[in-house]
Length: 469
Picture 1 (cartoon, one colour):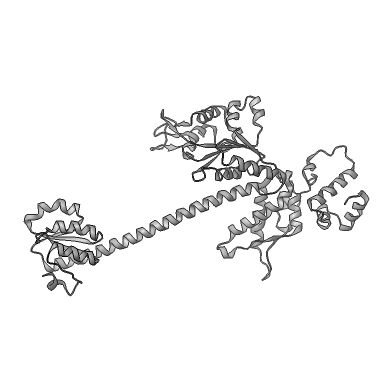
Picture 2 (cartoon, rainbow, N blue to C red; picture 1 turned 180 degrees about the vertical axis):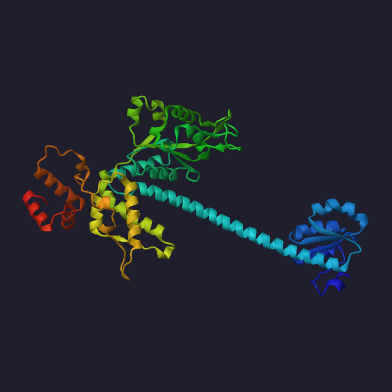
């Protein structure tokens, strides 16, 4: 009957029994399987149950008489039967049912295909996110340790040692020296690199909010508290690293609570008595002398000893001027890539000797952070200005911000320039300035003369006068 009624509408495969129908399904993929409940050898429900194992995507329909309906209820659910049709059926309604079943089949297959594509895309995106996170952390670490000066080589050596270790780390140095960047480098080199690094600038959080910020808040802990509560930084960093910037500004009451977390590894939300474990590695940073603060009673000595498992001192930029050219080159490349809309659009500017000399001579009170901000502004200004076709972009003195370009500080180049000049003769000062500038420019007299603000002939004459090489 099916073949006669629907052979013009559908491609039909028929079988005389359930066993024969299963043989058909083993050989052929079908969209819809239709079975009569009352068949020889095997009831329709059993046939459809076995068909589910052979062709799980096929849509199943059963034909039944009114007397079988109660028996079919559980079978319909357990065998995922799309619909049961009571006999005798209406030919037109059956045609509509079959068309809708075929549409459901194709829709399910399309959904399955899309879900698989989504799964693959999510896996790829997850892998890319891990890669980007690792690259970001690696680049962050690089930003903090670029340079081959003896001071930075020592920092790199210590970073390699403390990164993989589980100890607490204290980063010391002036504002802007790259302490947070080094914290990223330490986290990236640790066994916790796959987990979160959570940063808190203690100086930026009001004292009254510090406890909630660190420990979290239980539902209804106070008026206006979140209905579900929220986790604090300790819990968010569970399994990872918590970076406490400006820890020297932490109030004494909070210091005692932090010490308890360090000792017990447990945190308690505000408004709760339940202690929860928090497996966190602590990396702290400060530009203050914590030993002096401890002796003045402004910082807990026991907390100082706990956070000072290992310590790294990051030198000020003026103490390692020989690293400035490498930092500038690194920053130029980084910001040029950030400005490019597409990878093929990257245009990395060069830099003139005069501009590099000016950047190297500047004292950089804001250290690496200030240098990077200045270089970023220079790259933006350079790449935004018109230039003749075929002319490569070049950072020049005009791209340097006025406050840096026009600085006339009497600080001499090099670390020794920070020393007091009181009681030193002008001749000694001049001789020392020439010697340090020549060291800074690797003996390039043209660059040294430019930096000193004198002519090259004048410099040559003074070299002979002072017996300098």
